[in-house]
Length: 131
Image (cartoon, rainbow, N blue to C red; front, side):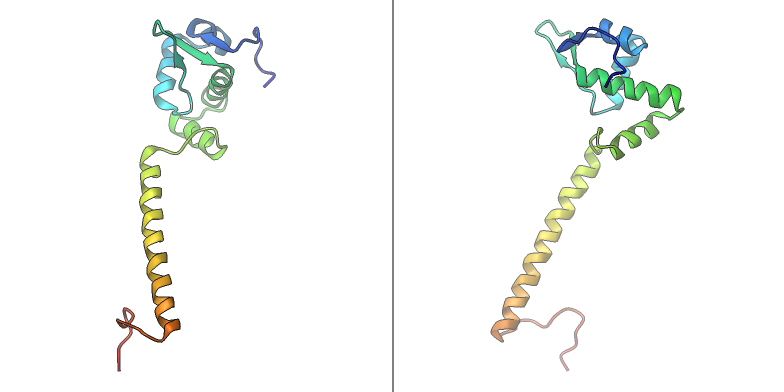
């Protein structure tokens, strides 16, 4: 992104990012808790070290919140739609559970299909009367 008007470096400290983005450091720390895609590394001394990608995402977040009037939830949703924000953990868990259940059903269907092809059906299908 060409919107960054600062020296090109690999990593930035929170004070530098605060100046680049144009918000106070406490706002950056708050956004870290609200947006899962913004996770700066920590130095050995425990200082936040932001990558260029983090800085670009923070500029995007600021633009959505301040210029376009999005709420935090709205900005999170917009970033998620654009692929910049991962889905919430609950959605991930639901997706894994759903996938597991679908794989179980697939196995049952494959088993029934093989039984039908061999001509041996051990149990009648659900909802079908035997008569």
